Structure formats: structure tokens, C-alpha cells
Length: 199
Ligand SMILES: [Zn+2]
Image (cartoon, rainbow, N blue to C red; front, side, top):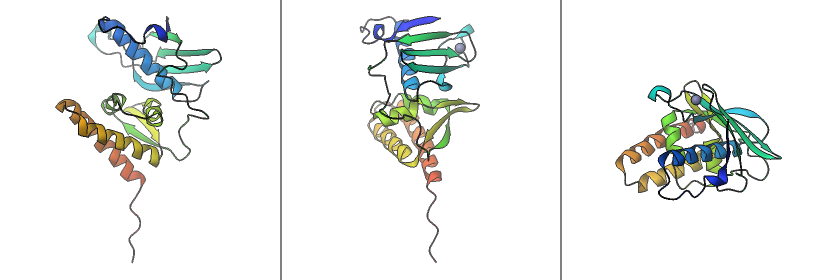
């Protein structure tokens, strides 16, 4: 079991070795996902496993459980035996806990997205906390991932994707964002069917 204190992975120096950086990314994503939902229950997030047995990515997902007293996040892969416990995350930049409930709003619907789209959403730089919670509470599904959002939340997220796609100088990343934009705006359109035509 990998026992870690998130504080040891924050603000790594520029010359930190690649594996340390990858581990920092992995742990900070786990903290964001685990704090984007209410505490106490264990659930399977859409976050992929970091391991690459025989140079192929492990197909497992991160199963998460957060306890607030004492503060502790437990994680394990649904496929391999990779697992760990994280402390020292409370109050960090990655702690997405909100006052009150961080659960999806009651009118939220499920929006299936591919892992590629979800990875593009995780890379967005300008998200506010509510949209970050929306992205990180994505659950694993057979086909990839499922977002839960109501119309207002999804609309806000689409706005962030559009803004970032417009300012993305890298063509490959821009295509990724454009694709995410199409998927999410289609889902948004499906949520708000056009009003019945007047006679
Ligand atoms: Zn794994």
C-alpha cells in the first residue's frame, strides 16, 4: 500500500524526476475526485490506473473512499493490486470540498463521455470550483465515463471549453477541445429540447 502525504508532492522543483511528477499528478487527481463528492461512501471514479504492466496501461479505474474525521483518502485500482492512502490534502489547492453537499444537483442527468473527452476536461486550466467538481466526480462506465450535470452546470462547463479552445495555440490540443465542445454541446442540446412550435 502506498501511504503518502500530499504535502510532500506539492510544489515539486522544476528538476524533479518524471516519476515523481507523474505520482504528484496521480495523487492530486485522486484528491480532486475524492473531494468532489460527499464523504463516506466508496465509488469507482473514471480516473485511470497509473500502472503499465507489460507496457500497456492497466485498464483499471480508481475506486475511492474519503473520510473527513480523521481526514483520509483511500484508493485502489479495480483491476490490479495498486492501492494507497493519502493524508495532508485538506485545505490544499486540490481539495474541492464545498460547504454543504457536493453531490450532483437533483435535476442532474448522466452524460456519457469517452476517456479522451474526460482527459481534455481534466486538462482545462480555467475551471471554477463548481465545474471542477463536475469533471472530477465523473464515474467509470463500461464505455468510458459518465458525467452528472444539470443544464446550468453543463452550460457553464461548455462555456469554459469554448473559451479555452479559442485561446489554445497548440493545434492538437485545440482539436481535442473542439471535440469535447461538440460532445458536450450535443448533450446540452438534448437536455433542452426546442419549445413546441406555435400554431
Ligand atoms: Zn491498475
